[in-house]
Length: 259
Ligand SMILES: C[S@@+](CC[C@H](N)C(=O)[O-])C[C@H]1O[C@@H](n2cnc3c(N)ncnc32)[C@H](O)[C@@H]1O
Image (cartoon, rainbow, N blue to C red; front, side):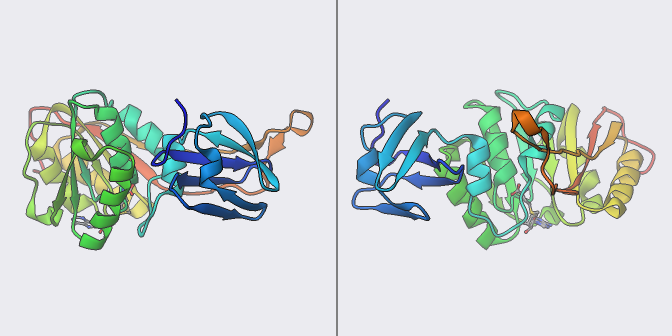
């Protein structure tokens, strides 16, 4: 399909630098290789190689990973390294009803919305309005607003839903909320908790055991990226040493001894 005004495009220069733009009339993108007029891209296709001004650009269709790395944010976000694994461990699929708390800038919320499909729903809790507004803008840009119900609410007040398929909990101190998460999950419902520190992992696992969760797992994903040079294949010199710990569990229809 030929590119039109309003379309999102990733422009990649020959040096590998990328820009995410929405094509607009009378607009241009300033880059270190010169200016690129949006009008020069109208009628091109995704995947084209275009010579504009002093540079050559590739017009690529943005992927979810592009959107996540280039999204507006005011909070720490969940990166693809962790979020892809969470989607699988929570078994997110078409039709699922999922709670995301707190929403922050909406990176995980958008991914959940994408995978619950048109018949699913994400109930997105956030206590700070300025973060929720950013999340809404991001989700809108990704065309997923109709799959998300935003709730400006402190989760200490509890949740409005019941029989939830999966729950993603990403707040600074998650342990106190484990019991109310348990109450809204359906039998066999799945929980993922993101914990930046081991102290939180300890208190979350303790609380999950008390409340009655089973299949409790603690994970840390260590990823190392390689320079894609076939003649000198080796890792990049620097790596991301830590993002977060991930704790998973499943609900059964019998409360634990510490509830
Ligand atoms: C690290 S951010 C979440 C990032 C988000 N998962 C993402 O992928 O973009 C944590 C968020 O939890 C929110 N939060 C913290 N405590 C909360 C509470 N008790 N109720 C609702 N939201 C809360 C914060 O305002 C913040 O926006």
